[in-house]
Length: 365
Image 1 (cartoon, rainbow, N blue to C red):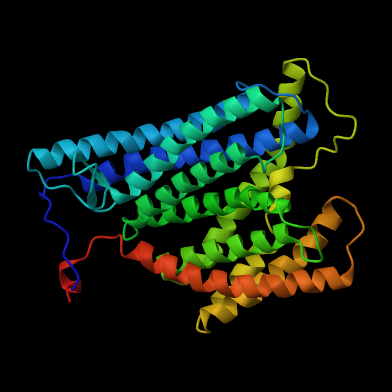
Image 2: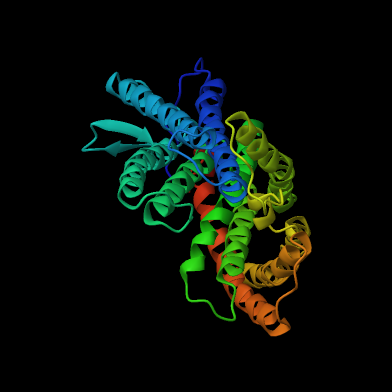
């Protein structure tokens, strides 16, 4: 049986209170996304760095902003519950007990804050790792994967925070933007699949297809309205366009500012934006047209298209030879299988996010 949301005093200004901390969490994730695309471009076009380069500071400050905003909400919620005051569930979802109910944490902020806290721990590990092994610029080192997953958890928390307010305009917009940021960021996490044994199947392209389908379907199911999938894809396209210009420019300007030369082979091609499927808007439009079909079938079609076109996209952008036809076909087929799984999971995750929103009085079972 559904449980109705606790009553909130009529004079409580729930929307501004909900929007303000949610904006800080989302702003922190966007800082992290900006720092990541800048950092990857820096390693590609320039190379050497230290713990305190500007791209790194963007990454750290992003997690710090999201983490502090989450902590403040948790402390305020805990204080309110101890005073017997009703806590509006639109602010990050219903509060759950932490450490034996020592703290009361809205579930969305609990997730975003936990991701930020783990980022700090993995950052310390990364410092130790560099001190032990020296300079490295690979994505797939253990502390780097931990750092990326920590930011991913914070971004998931941001989606959850806005999902609780999806009935409000700011909640719906924030959910789409935070989902788009999560999708863009996940393209880098997929690079970690390079450590898998190389073969006919391009694991990175399959991973990119899986995450793209999962998050677009999740966003569409969360909003449950026509245009949800295209909305997520359009915001991803905005991020892709902005970082396409920003990443090479920022790496070049910062290198000149601190007196470091660009690599001789630096082409100025934006690294992170290239990882994002250019066909995503087309795929999202197909999802909108076929939304009445089984979601696994739609996801399979989307996964097939994304995994099959990513090799062509890379060959076109980098002006290289396209791989063998058999490799592309097999990768696309594997992408279809994982796309079907992503469609199924994306729908389930979207439904889970919908349940975060407060239950209205008329919705009681």
